[in-house]
Image (tube, rainbow, N blue to C red; front, side, top):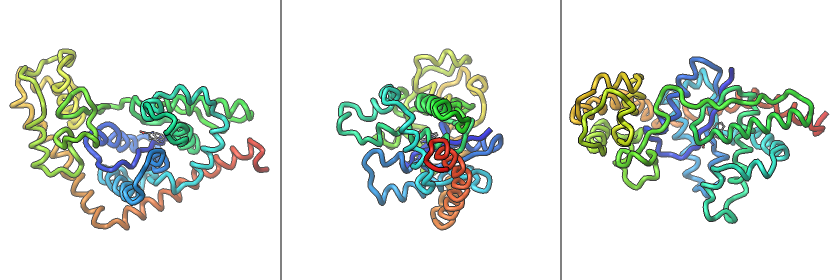
Length: 331
Ligand code: TRP
């Protein structure tokens, strides 16, 4: 079992990123050999500010380490530091079919009405993602629901390449969705939209850098309803905000929603919110402390990334070489 996953270095990490992706990665380190990377080549498929991109990569890497990704155990690196990703992506662009990419819903969503003005990179984004995965012959790819279609595309590309060139080089990967925590953390102001760094209201999200007081205040002001909490999670249907807070509590405390509700059934949010704030502070305060230390010493993060990139190249280079051989590009 080998795990590969990437995250875009968007900056402004929040509770949604932590519970939805990062803490799952942290747990997977116990079970498998893991490679995690900052997807900076994917970030440039839309317009970027170069200085911002650089600082986001380092900041995101520091946040991952602060959250528990152990660079001594997992391979952590910036995607662009391993040129094999780009080289394999070109080869795989010649395996993927235009018809396959035309079905990708994320491109349709992201390009919107401006399809003609979108970058070609945004269109072939899923092929680079396939290269990220197939380069390391990963078996499992932990991703959110929104990435499932891209993992299936990587599977199709692996199978077609293997068939076309009569090889067993590529391992068709499996998406690995779910995994215990709240897969989707919603806005604290609107239970129907995802917690996001682009929401204009800072009260809608809990940032990794928020102070204990800010966390408590955001939880206190979080939108709720006047009903008491039920015993059965099914009864949270139609109560998006209540359900979100219960989901967050379950993810943070490592309980099921049933267990959370068993503790709070019949009580209102006046009792629930202070407990949630305490649980969040207990989770986030040590992460923030480690992040502050890493920020004060950027060389340490840079060294981890350089060492991770060297190791990733060692792991990936033989796959690229074999793909080149299979194609007749080298002897
Ligand atoms: N596209 C993914 C996202 O936006 C990030 C990503 C890039 C990725 N390459 C990957 C995830 C390879 C898993 C495997 O979330």
